[in-house]
Image (cartoon, rainbow, N blue to C red; front, side, top):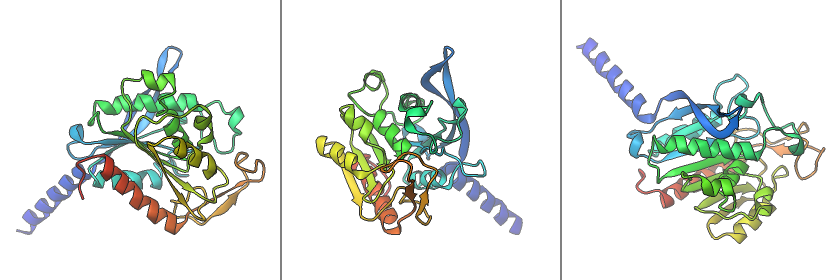
Length: 283
């Protein structure tokens, strides 16, 4: 009897593991080409239950990449994937840095970076194509942080020829503290509901250009959190990063760190936004 109970418990655990979406390593082709071949991005696929009919979200990492200091997928990415899987949403995380020999972009001046938003936009569009064969093609989304949030804007700007030419596009997008200035200058036009989540005290990617972008496009919604710095959704104490040469005051560093109030409010708003735009989702 005890042996039978252990067996049933093991089966139940295996079934639960399959439902919430085990991490699967994959390779995802970008639309960016090198020597006549598509750049291949390392990726991590977290399939929701009944993935072929489920919505799917592409997670776009910031300038530090998708990994922790130990080389594993970061806790931010894992946590986001778990939360989205619990809502019935499949998740793909891609790595734009490793295929191009980069470890991070944070300490590189924007004008000197070899990996630009052109390559990252093509990575995102390629990943959306990959997702369209593994999920509901009408419910594909983008979720990005910082540089990944900027990528999200570059990959959704209907004023960009490459975006318009792509047969697969997202149906919604969520950006945490993106840099909005570049796409604002490019005449950003959203072709889908966009949610921008920014900190009022952010001195790395300031709120003002994002406010202007939202004011100019009715499909763009913005939430601004008082007193919040860059990275407000992290479980870390705010600190000054002097190694970052960009920001509002170049050469003086930028503040990065968590804000419990903004973290909780933004998580709540993300869940609401997804349920408002993707139906049906579990309650």
